Length: 242
Ligand code: TMP
Ligand code: ASP
Image (cartoon, rainbow, N blue to C red):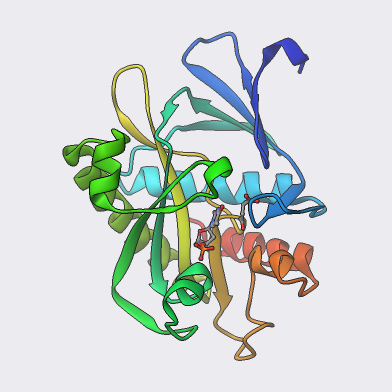
């Protein structure tokens, strides 16, 4: 891959142009960051594992009718995706209270959220990815009312499909973050990645509140066995994918 083809380098991926103008190549890196990149490190083999996990989850979602940017994964760390204009919103769905929800509201870790909470954060590192309200999103012109309704519905459907799938893997989908983009034909597509970097995943066969964690919280909280947790998630997905 030569550097002239490089379009963008983010914290976890590099995006390259391809010969086709509407197709990009996403290369998954091992770099890991947390707390708005104040904590940096590397998770060995993360790029390969997250690319594989994202591939399986995008295929599953496509098969269930969710439009995604995924086209194919030609290499272990590479994904061909449809070129989209990313909407700068981090759409977070929470089934169980954890992370910033507990810190900001005082809700106890593990509190079930029924119906699941759908939240929007502004994808802006300089501002620290703040929580947005519906009215702020409209005032900022980040999405229209119709797009917001569509995003909420898509997020809820994605949550239902992924929760059900992870349950079959004996994993609880606690919460996750997704991003969406708009392609040249104005289609709204699920974009970015879905992996242990962007989900909270708890092992249903572990009761210990630290041992059950199979996601990036192991890195955020220095719990150790980060690589093993990511590998475990991929292994369980491979064992259950049809
Ligand atoms: P939070 O509890 O820290 O707000 O995170 C909610 C979910 O979003 C969790 O599954 C981790 C994911 N997430 C990201 O993918 N990127 C981020 O920058 C943050 C803060 C969270
Ligand atoms: N990836 C995010 C960052 O470093 C934060 C996180 O996932 O905790 O900005």
